[in-house]
Amino acid sequence: MNPELSPFRPGQPVPTEFFVGRIKEIQCVRSMAKASAQGRFKIGFISGERGIGKSSLAYFVRRLSDRECNTAGCHVFLGGVQALNEMVRKTFDRLLKESVDKPWHQQVSEFFGDHVRKVGLLGVSLELDLKERDLSILTRNFVPSLRNFLDKLKGQKDALFLVLDDINGLAASEEFANWLKSTVDEIATSDREMPLCLLVVGLEERRRELVEKQPSLGRVFELIDIAPWSDEEAAEFYQRAFQSAQAKIETAELNTLVQFTGGSPVLAHEIGDAVWRTAKNLEIDAREISQGIFNAAEVIGRKLLEPQIFSAIRSERYRSIFRKMADKPQMRFRRSELAARLTNEEGKVMDNFLRRMLNLGAIETDADVRGGYKFPNRLHAFYFSIVAKREKGEKLR
Ligand SMILES: Nc1ncnc2c1ncn2[C@@H]1O[C@H](COP(=O)(O)OP(=O)(O)O)[C@@H](O)[C@H]1O
Ligand SMILES: [Mg+2]
Image (cartoon, rainbow, N blue to C red; front, side):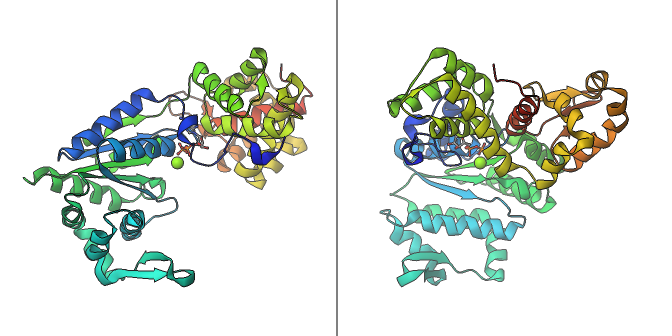
């Protein structure tokens, strides 16, 4: 069917009406926002694997709290940012941009003074023009600067809801860990109120990395860990999306979709979209569902995988091992279990294969199990299991 009409949006923030589940997590962040609107500083870490819905949750609660708690929301995407100064620049730049069209824009413009530059065609958008020296000062004086910013908003907004999203590049740096720690300490030891709700978003490994560098951070974060959807939630998502487009799908087919989704929202959008494109009309049948799932794997492979991984899993030498490694839709496996299923010939090159896959980031060692491996996320697990099925000429069910 026409891709333009697809109710699925892979890779984009989900519209509120398709947002499914996360009730506990929403409540938790929402009460943090409420406390901050009463002057209390709150800091949380939203963790979970890639595509599980961390950014979407932050986005959803931010909208909610802007309405309910009169916060000024600001969502900063820091993917690829590795230096603290750059993070601070992006944060203040985002604060400026978020204020455009809002009643408090005047105050924000005054706050930034002649650092605001009009850019773009006809000067329609604004940008913060900060020199390295200004940035270093802002970074060192982050807390007082934010206080001044909040003072400016007084009477208009009760608190700042600040999301530092995708801190994966920063988490490895000592500088960031120290900065975060001293920011938290500075606020905690001050006797003034700090109406700030700060949410740091990243992979769980990154949170651990941060806490290793600054163990006391482990105690200050409220943890919001995003788990995969339950089967009921995944089913609810598909039902709502298909219904909104008047498409029909039988329960057995819905179950197949849920089974392959493995609780991953990003996969649900990819699979849903691929099924939508494959289907001829609004009565979606079993064959179209299967074909859609195979097509989704193709799309994910193209978006996700390095060309070297493709060639490794297709090479004559490794192909048969790959099929045995990936033929179950699970996230983990043991070296010994895999070895037991290989022929002598395959066994000889297994360790080379595993090393190659590790180096390429297609698998990771599983810290919890000796001789254990796992796929870095559900997207990899899905892709590999579908390709293994296709290679073996199997049907989906
Ligand atoms: N609760 C949800 N309901 C519906 N769709 C969701 C939900 N959470 C995430 N998604 C969708 O899944 C995809 C990945 O979500 P995202 O928030 O970007 O994940 P993350 O930040 O953890 O990598 C997006 O297309 C998003 O629209
Ligand atoms: Mg994200």
